[in-house]
Image (cartoon, rainbow, N blue to C red; front, top):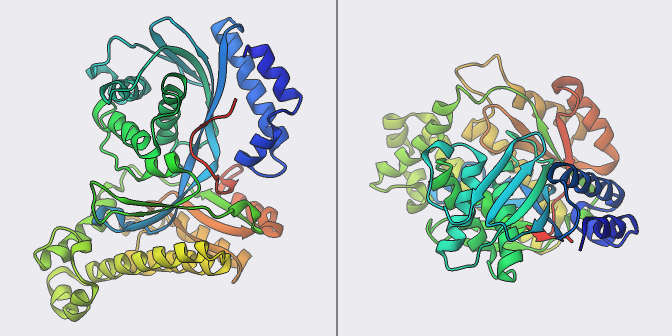
Length: 426
């Protein structure tokens, strides 16, 4: 398909059904305009329109329940979201992969040169080279292409823009050269490998697994090297709620110690019993030994341990509610997770800077607007950053106006859970 043929098909509405599937009801027109704009940008940048063209999409992701549990081998409920990175791609025989992203420089590699390069660490070219190299190492085919990508997954929002980009690249190579033979788990592992080894960032696997799988996903990290993955096929778009992620601002620059303390205190409680992580310790053992633990490690360590066990239970309850089609019961667990993070895990603001409490303020606004309807909680690592809320659709405008009056225009993203992972759209 040439670029002109692709544009004509989009304008004629041939992909409206797929756009509705990916982005939600009523979003097909905006999606079509977005894809048409990227097609034009490809043509302008690369200077050609004839060839074998495709369009790909990979979503961002959100944590739904299971806050600060994965590092102690716990359980997490996460979901892909209907914002994404899209790519217009042309298969070539140049021996090179070229990827231009809107607002960024071009990344280019020779597919015959796949060893890590020290000067690329921390740059997007390292991701491109790493994904390609790992696919080749695993015995799959690789080949050359030109791509132009655009993302509306906000960087630094906890929605995993980098993992979406990694999974998009893997999906392109899997589709163009391997007849979609790379499965979801392999795609996630390939993406993590590129980030760990080539980009030089020691990330876990949860972000990539959620994006690669799509929809809502329940993870159990009891076997950290072979986590249990259960996809929950619930139609979130059919509910009367929208998912709102609000960036409350605040810098993460001085929060490394705060993040480390959450994991460290949980692991300290595990070490009290001669274990590595809390998943190896029975909850009742901790309860029976609270006086001795608090004397040795302090009260906050006890509270964070109890948060860990409670979150594992909430993940199971939330997943069961979705499988039963009981969305109200699901929302109850999400709100309970938020209360536990606030009271017990205590990751809504840094004790080093109590004057800065954007997340706490965001939660307060949500409670004021929503009352007992919907759900709201800290999103992701916490201390600074984002809140999550499931907002009744008739209250979305009111809620968005209230939070953006405090945190700034554009701070609130209105999303839904996307039913699939990375795909070839056209």
